[in-house]
Length: 250
Ligand code: SF4
Image (cartoon, rainbow, N blue to C red):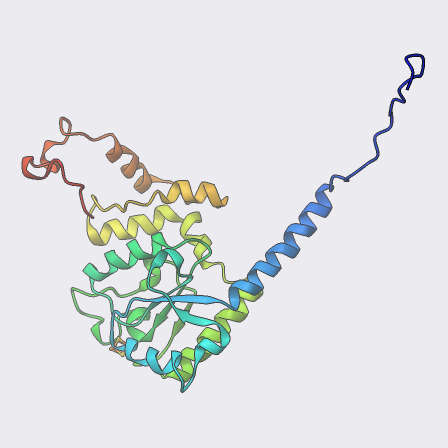
């Protein structure tokens, strides 16, 4: 090329990609959500807490006789990688604290199934001072299995029903924990005491997932905020000298 020749200048850049409009984006999101729900429903990792007699029905449900693994239901050892929390019978007040801690560690979307009449209304322990009467007062429950104790056939049917609900995008009980967290926290505080709290920042999670509702914050979450400002000087009786350097445990 000599110095007198002009270098061609490209003025019209070819359109390499088109930006999707809002309608296309929402359609794409819907397709992806449906696909994710379908995959989720076919690979449920189960954290079974084994709180009561119903736990004994799980081995035959999972293993060769009924073989729930063939439809993608498999045990998991940690709440952080589990989708489904099974409460397999009666819960003492003390055990419920651990159940709530486990539930809050699970990532959303997460599902809960209560086994037997003990989780529905207290069952044969309905008048015990030490047991919890209704599980869904403290964490959201997707399905209950009636009976004392439920047969593996009933457990299998509830798993299949839950899978169908997840596939259809209707297993949304977990959202209620974020939308009405203040009410759940209030009932937990009534049972465990006003100083009850867990290490999980549920309100921040609600914001993250976009499920902040009128019931997310309220008088009980305000107590948590207030407590975050407490210190050794303001409330010394909460921090006895012997345990000052230890993390407080709920
Ligand atoms: S419902 Fe019956 S089988 Fe289940 S935990 Fe209660 S007493 Fe046990």
